[in-house]
Image (cartoon, rainbow, N blue to C red; front, side, top):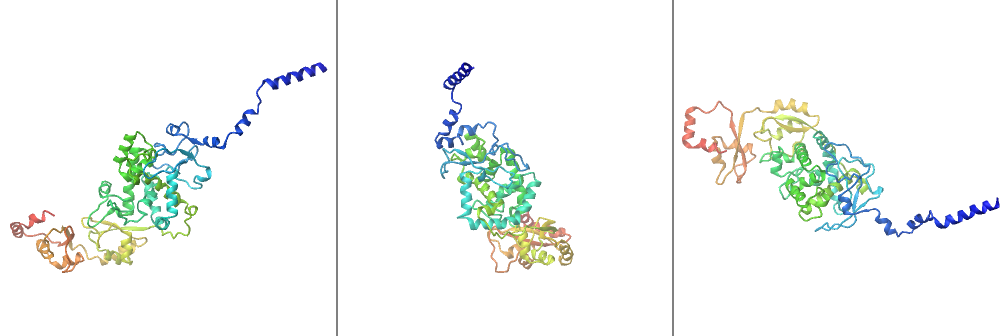
Length: 445
């Protein structure tokens, strides 16, 4: 028996010498330098360009218009390890942010990526631009609720509303050096393409409702082209052609990759991170130090149809409100009246005033006694000559255009010419007009 115990002991002793120690690998790992551990959290550029099973929020085909808030499962929020210079974004790497730096309690229906550029704009809005951004936030609540609804109705993510925040600070009268106007900053050509009229009398780019519908259509077209909200937003800023050429030149569909090159302007490179920063702050302002904001009341109004060239004073009188209230609700109107050549124009009036307006307007409106022509002032024109041209008195022209006899006309100015409604000129008077060349002159307008 003693011999058997001794034999077993010898076998165990020999096994412990020949076989590797089961705890050696763990001990060796624990002694690795801390720098080596940190590198396990980093992803090289090659790994990012060819992701395996991870679902990144940068994927151009990740979301579609109208999707609900994307799931955060298996998604990463990236941060640039190295600061981005203004001239070049070369040689940067991504780092997964800790969970406590990711958004908490706030859902987004557009991809949200937090990187050094986004954090740079967050800091900018918190410091140098805090007063301005606070004003933007205060005004935002006036427009965001109904703009969100319009985006949703058009099948778009509601959080695209924050593009208007960085475009204009939700100011309908915002006007840029590139002649873009309104809360969504449409230039005239693009606005016209999406149904926004812009002339002497009216600029529908300033209409919060109409311009939001136009922006939704434009953004939908951009998304259909690029299948990525970041590229769509960049295309909104720079034009779809510029983004398409950049993608072709650098053979990438990744917005962040495009920002590494000089082809896109700095304004376009900054556009997406600025939008993300604005969205993060606007959804959780107190977290970022914005407290006690005096938010404006959400915009509410009724609409009524009025004849062309209806005086805004008359509309205000019918609603029993001030003229300023009517003007504030209708920033698209550039003059004192509704535009000519827009019969049954829908004007906005204070919410709850529709019945009162209809009752009073029927009594106050003098009826359509005139038809109107517009005349564009040319070099050498005078009020008396224009009155003679249309065979009307000067007084109606002065009154309807809010002018006096000493008013100076400027080239390109538009005048309303009130023409009395009658059965029409007699044949002999028509012949006389033609002999004087007046009809030919009228035909030019």
